[in-house]
Length: 248
Ligand SMILES: [Zn+2]
Image (cartoon, rainbow, N blue to C red; front, top):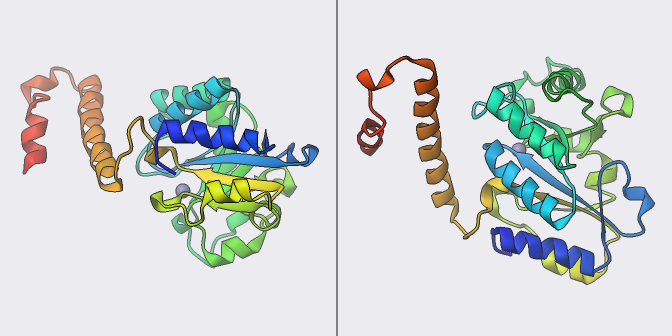
């Protein structure tokens, strides 16, 4: 499968053609044959908004998991809060993406940390958070079947969604299993599909091109944000100077 919006649309169409109902973490049991569409936002909320628009356009909804402890974006910034609201307003769910690496292994109560981060995200979104996923989970976390907030917040890496569902993912821009073949096989009534919006675009881009585009777009964004915060920034640095600096 290509990493394009067209291919993603075709994936959804194929799921529907093969009788899958697009569900979420809370209502899947009502369908005989269900698929949960999940996206992790690791680097760039903008790409998630684009994916959310595509799904909205097709008439399906999914769950977007967002980090609240990322070095790459601040969910509380005005811009990012607006993006997350846009995703919610299109009918999608936003859940917590949790990075355990941030915490001292063995010294932190991870479930408590998840609950604290979920509460922060709830503040940011202005409504309840009902699901979470892990960012690069350790083996211990994969096996832990954590119950978060007494089960109110669904753990997408819990036994139900990680073992009783057929789980497929495009992590590191690589489908470890043939997702198309899995859908067509008819072997699975419960599918759980993780895609990372970062990798998708109108035209397919290599991982290398995707990372370069991201770094450059961040530098430009940094300049624009500086411009919003520093009066007469041009006296110190013009936007064109950025390219010479990046060239070095
Ligand atoms: Zn992640």
